[in-house]
Length: 298
Image 1 (cartoon, rainbow, N blue to C red):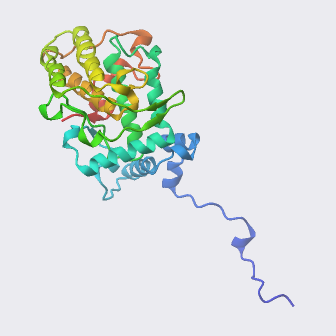
Image 2 (tube, rainbow, N blue to C red):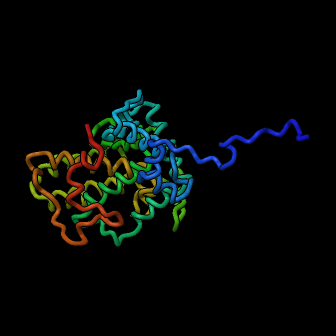
Image 3 (tube, helix red, strand yellow):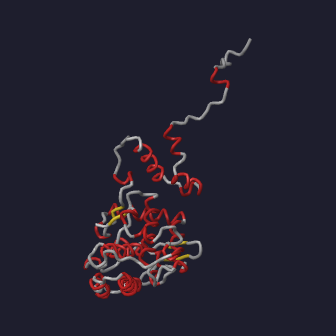
């Protein structure tokens, strides 16, 4: 007699079960961002990227869910760092710490150390850094989609110093080629105000070559020197979070100028390989509209 514990086989038990595959999951297996991150390894796969892909799949089927605005990938609204709430400050720093820990931030820092990109002293300065900033912002958002890159508006009297919430944030950054302990030795508020006082005359320039030369050579460079420490050297400057907020303000001023009577229709004179913002495939022409790049300023 057979053991009573032996179960009678059913037709379903005679063959191995096939994995359940609903159409939505099947489609998600072919989407770009998640697959690319999986190919790079679990270290770079984030829940934010999977969330955005899922929302996109259901949105194409006209199915909506109650989610925060950042879950549907709206334009990144860059804010003045002085207006950030304490929660926004902490979310930014948390996202940055994740990038520091997983090596993404160090790799971004090293890109700026490679002067073969010709991103300084040429008409590539503004468009190249526009792409560079966006790469950093997207990396932040891969972990915290609600985080955007704030700008440090040193033209404002209340911001003529290192932002208070960043004073104590001086991490040590390990890159593929160097270890950078972030240091600063900021100058006086009156010196910073003096540097910023040059902005109105620069904004009145009507030729791109003159505008970019003065914005970079006079104001941008002076503020790097004013901050001092890590910010005073091209290879180490991006290790300081203040670098990104400083450059976001430079980028914002360019955007304001682009939309002014003085700057309308004025673009860099770049062609061939010089018009490609290496190491990314983005062209100079693609940097002219920040909304098309996915962000905006107030």
